[in-house]
Image 1 (cartoon, helix red, strand yellow):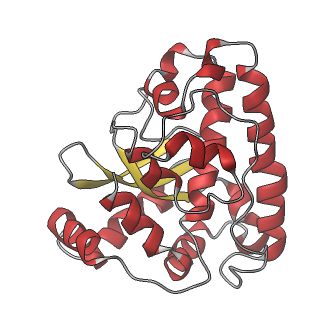
Image 2 (cartoon, helix red, strand yellow):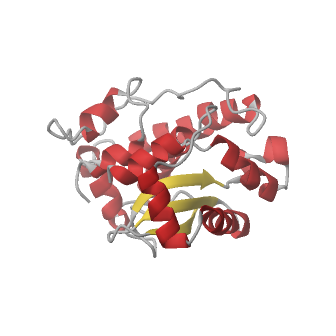
Length: 233
């Protein structure tokens, strides 16, 4: 994957996290070392209500995501992994410890998750819409396939919309904190859209009704960010 591709993966909320703009801006030299800067949430805790309640958002961000971040930094401390960018790290994640794999994935996956949601309504760009229609037939068929991946995933994990090397799109799901950039998954590519289906992402509000959480997710998708990820991959 080219370095400029990572701009698309991390989305647009870069102001609060200097590490991301330094590492993934294609117009300046890449910074190898992973900086210890925890990115700010791009909206208020209650911004996504009624789809995601403020309490769930606060706990998810301040407890779960922050813990992954802190544990990831601790896991890579004084190791060669601390001098790598996340693209290269994930591409060889099978050679790393379980702590780096799980916490690095948790840190990265959640960052994408926050960025691909927004309280502002949006629609896929013409370019992304064309790619979705080409790969799935229609937007409705894509949504159905993505929703099924999220609803039927057993246990904790994620559902993904991914761009393959050939530019075609596909849906996949991963266990725990794995993602399509990692060499341990069957279907690899550039992550465009993700949905967290760990119970902590929805249980306070939806209890065991994961399907309802998945269906409501479409109301808060930030298609502007997802479109840019595809077009800049």
